[in-house]
Length: 191
Image (cartoon, rainbow, N blue to C red; front, side):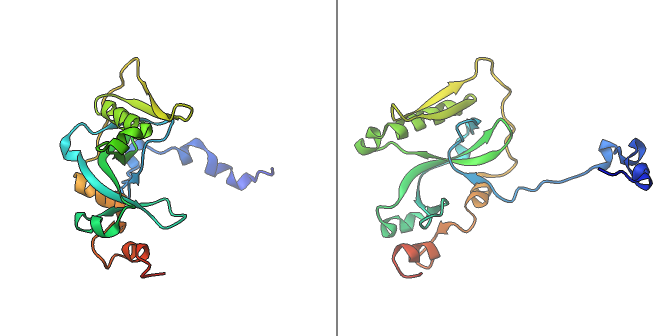
């Protein structure tokens, strides 16, 4: 690599060091992840009822789209059997990444037969009071959980209402009525 003498002044410490008070950056939150925690994430679920909602109905996006859509209560019967009933909860990782955690409901005998759903819900309930890490045990068909031996400090929660968090997580992915594009796709009314 060739170095140029005229650039030497640029790289001197006095020309590049910045006082921390001179740096002011705002990081507005423009979206939130919707999904279960990653297998390496230590997470907490918000302990307050104000930051949970359920049961709510979700449906998957079109083929190849991993996004999920929130379904208005008035549209659940029209959407049909493709809905999944979940409880939505505010959650945060130890790396301070906030997200909305959809937790499967376990209301029917069929739900209770799905050991992934049952253990997923068990992990979520633990996460309301302590940091946990959830990962799949595919041999057993369940989720396993790790808890901390030495408790970490409580998380810092976003200064947003739960409705604001849901808006950031779902954006336009909401089936409000029969004019919703995703509803029309489901019914074969739109290509």
